[in-house]
Amino acid sequence: MTTKILIVEDEPDILELLCYNLRQAGFEITTAEDGEVALRLAEQHPPDLVVLDLMLPGMDGLELCRLLKQREALRRVPVLMLTAKTEEVDRIVGLELGADDYVTKPFSPRELVLRIKAILRRAAHRQGEEAEAGRLEIGPLVIDPTAHQVQVGERQVELTATEFRLLHTLAQRRGRVQTRDELLEVVWGYQYSGYGRTVDTHIRRLREKLGEACDWVETVRGVGYRFRKEMG
Image 1 (cartoon, rainbow, N blue to C red):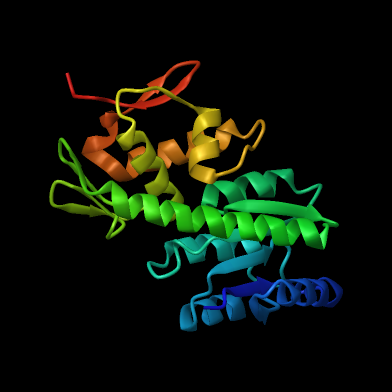
Image 2 (tube, rainbow, N blue to C red):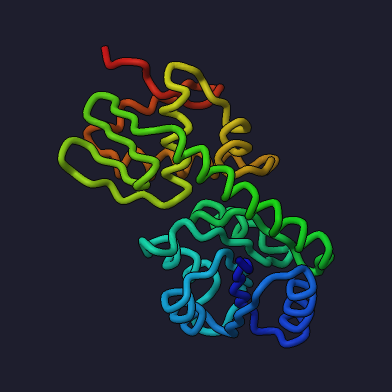
């Protein structure tokens, strides 16, 4: 089955370059030049991956990324951001919202294709791991990788795909400290040097959503995070 990619880009020259190279690589391409159209297309025909420019007319790329990750049918769709080198803050925010990787403009088409293939491999690998991992029940917390669902007691917890991977990784390794760099590599699948703040932001949001189960995720100061083996 052909992999479907949605390209969201408003600059005609860049859009043409992206379409040519991704079609040459064997991908099926759909395009949108603004966020509203892109969201509608993604909802009607969910893609396998989104290439998303951050600087868009109307709804910007960060807002579109946030909305994609809020949709149940789209939250697991990988997002590759296109950014200018000066947009470091936007890159960090994009990663915090759940984007999987980024490429800075101007970019090498070959590098872009390699990044996309790597993201798709990681996504397939994670899905396989989650399917094999089985259901985890820890205290009031239930993590079901097959259904991609989390419950605290009787309450369903709505997590983004990245938040789910983060919780699942910590829970699978409960009792063992995970450094920020380790979590970045395992959960995001990429080494973001100096982006430990991204992990901290996701942990904070994860704890907020877990509510009464938030104490299971423990901070190890100066090192990273750990999922408790048992509550004292």
